[in-house]
Image 1 (cartoon, rainbow over the protein chains, first blue to last red):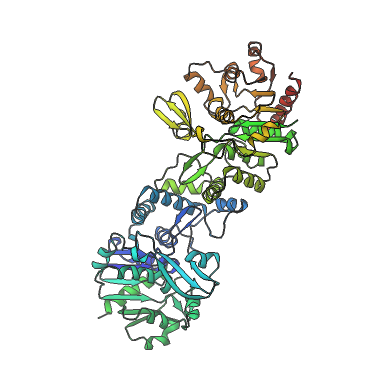
Image 2 (cartoon, rainbow over the protein chains, first blue to last red):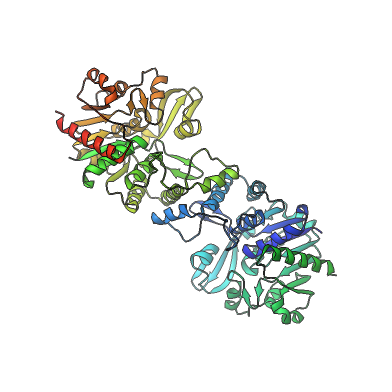
Length: 306
Length: 306
């Protein structure tokens, strides 16, 4: 079964890693959000791509889910000492990634070329694709004005109240090479437990700009468990947009798109309200085993879909 | 006695540090070569300025003379793993300096503003000035073509045979703010034991583009001891240019400019051949004490000059 996974950062990376554990590498393509990408200290930073690649390569910090394991923080400490911006966590190993990506992009390589080469260097054998090689920039519209995503997310700790979202550059963005082909040959799409508003929607909006035929099976895994998110502001965003955060709300977010929905056991009582086939299972991925177990459960679930 | 020191990298930084130990901070200005500056991995790197500032701040690696003490190398290790250029040693703390300098230069700050702010952050209380805020780029003309200085020095390990030197951008370069004023109010200029061809000449050539009146006392300390350099390619350059490398050759390099010359005890026999006042003393600075001792000796020597 050929699978395309759509992923944002930490939660998406975990399920992508689970899928990579149980599928042959040639049967998995991970399409990653680049709406969070930004320029900082002159560097081209792709937080979700890096989180997915580090996770798949076994290089990620297992505790935080982002950044590198065994990381040092000496460069940013000196930037801080010199009075420079230190609000974005840049570990030293991670900086190497940003330096080399920035160098290659300036040389004229595309983000997907860079991502392919980095995956090869890191021993990632599944295919990881940025959603687009053209910049799409998620803007969070808030009571404190329109904020670039990392400004909202990291610099302001998600404190401003969200009013809506905008994706600058979307009109000029095409799916990256390989994205359409992967979806056309996929048996199913798995929408990973990433933030629907700012991690998955940008990918879906880029896909909508192509005429790609979606596979019959599209399942989403709820990033909201018991009304809360494991990490990130998705639940807070739902609340501020006037929607009760819940797995149900996530399923409605994707209404019309899905053929199946996966929610956590703690939300089992919501399943009857969801008008498509559901899988109720443990979706909280605390260990590597949890990741593989959820991946297996999702694949079995897809096989049962009409 | 107000002193201006002209300095390149390691050797110059050591004597500048000695002078900083024995002079009140307001009486010492260090003018630093920027001909070695270059862009690498998108960063604006000023090797001599950093070496001088790190040394004066007590942050330098005492063993190598360049880079930071207690340095880590995690960023460049990842750049290397990703197939990027790793020929220029970039420590993690050092990277922080380059990132913040690059950010400020792109914001429109001048190199001298950045240097002043960095010195303040690092607790350097003597005045350190780049020779110019405009880019001057030392080009080493060799049997393998014209090479940017760091390409010759670091990437090719000084192996190409030197035929001459060129300083691109010199025609558009003015002394940085403060340089002319420091020289006008100085009682003496000390040319530190730096490479005459590629560390001191660029500074002198920038100064020649102004109408600044040089102080009566100008003394140079030979970077060549017993026909060899403590560090760097100066001796090799002299040989390849058909000149026997020696303290005598250095004194002739600066002919017409100097009022006094300082050479090492091992070269005492050369002193009678030098037609200006000489000081023969220990010039090999192995310890902090050596640096201060040489500085004291040079200052006393200046006081004896007519």
